[in-house]
Length: 287
Image (cartoon, rainbow, N blue to C red; front, side, top):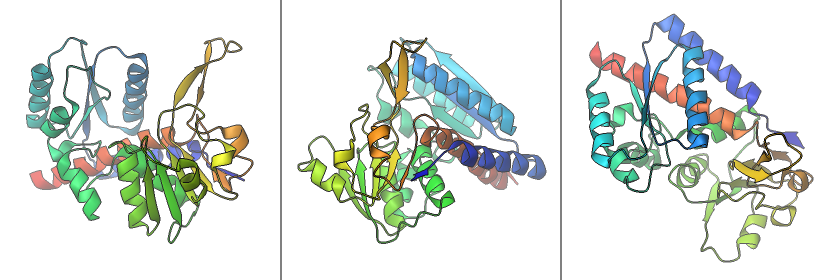
């Protein structure tokens, strides 16, 4: 069984980005908008900020109160759209309930959309000529490529249909000539479909949902989930697990991503990659 570790892959890619920025003199600036004080979001934003700093990307975080109106968020995005020193914009999701996520995403200049979620970029992704791809799906493909896992002709089953992971990873797998099935909360015969997968991507946000009984012998399992569950043996009082029961599934899988230490590390590396790509485009336009 191959443990698809993300750390080595992510660090190598981050070093490559750092070298390119230094050697090519690219000035990249990433603006992150964080609305509210969700601990997980704050921690993730801090990780992004640190990664940018290490790669030579200027990073600015706009911390807005939970009560900030939707119009104020849209106004801030418009300001950043017009700021030539900002080459990438990211709005941390989830947003408070009173803010329409779709309106916020659509307000971002597509050429500064580092998450690849603007309808322009999402459409180009499904047409097969993307500018940037959503970071987590892009990271999944990157780790599969690194470990030389061939996707052509394989049955790929995606558990989850979110815009952030489920739909875009399905498109990217299809582009690699996999045969793709997307499963969700209304899917019938979920276990049967899951058992048919040569490549199984779990992105449903339910801790330890995928068990050995749902995975066929020799499958490649990609665990996107990051969940906290109570664990009184830990000083923190919890431990981090994925959507996959790693202990049981790893006995059947030919390869599997761990949680933590798997896909999450690649997500940040791909964010840096997208930021660099968009900075290059804007630099070329300004020339």
